[in-house]
Length: 389
Image (cartoon, rainbow, N blue to C red; front, side, top):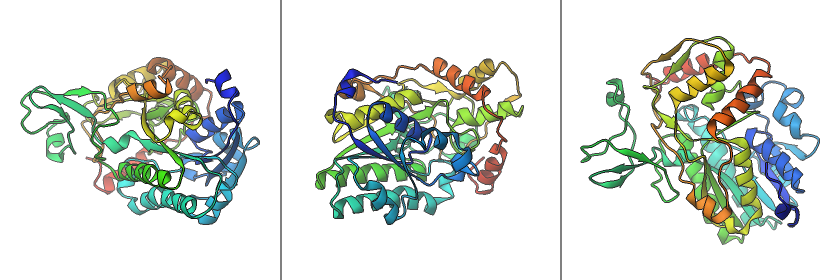
């Protein structure tokens, strides 16, 4: 990770990270400490992420606990926010419920934590004298829904939800009324249409908009990062609701078959954890980030079938792989980031290409205790809710 002399010479900050014991948060905390900043973490140590007995067994929490001021609490409690905010110059708001599929049937929980927790933070900042000068909020590529496409006849278009009747017939690619020729996928820039296709995406849009709207009115600089699919060593291998790299890895390690949804050609932009942390540090430290919204991604679309093939190659093993045609309502087909803006304003480009990053990830997984796969339970749960076809 970057630890340049430029950052070493700047003013040191007191930084609060909500969700700071999570995958992104713990890595960010360690890097901020290396850069000379003081870190406070507010986290509820959710069992879904950290497992049972997290204070004694969660590697993410254990990696930071002796070097940060840790507050076990929730973003839905004013007392916890007040205790955490006190004395900090910057808030990095990462705490959120994050499962796209799960959000479609735990709607109140996702709304209470993601929207309500952010509203509570902003309410405190608006009505209490604090030292906070900047709020960095973790937004998501999920706010875009489907990515940006070009129609030869019509120009840029932003397709909406795919229809169940089309996907039942095996037609998974997006379409647009009046476009006779297939649409061309292009990079999604920050000015693209916002039209989330899941409750999770709606809550992230709401978080971002509240921060970007409220903070300037109270003299606080806002920054929003629309993260793509973040991966790397340290991410949860037991959470069946987020991260296909972890889900597939745990299935492979348990010698269980892999069911690739749709036709395997659906794609995502995977961005390595070190790059995400570096981008976030630039947002914290650079005034050029103030008031801006940035995509954070690799700028490349990787098909899911290629992901599975690389995982099997790096694990040097074989398990049954089926491209099933199953699909999950609310899933998008494609989305990858246009990263021109963050390169232009912050000088950031992702350093770690997907094949190198995935090799590092699989080497780390090989060193971990094999986790019991809970993927089948999550599939059963989604099917019972009518979300998996």
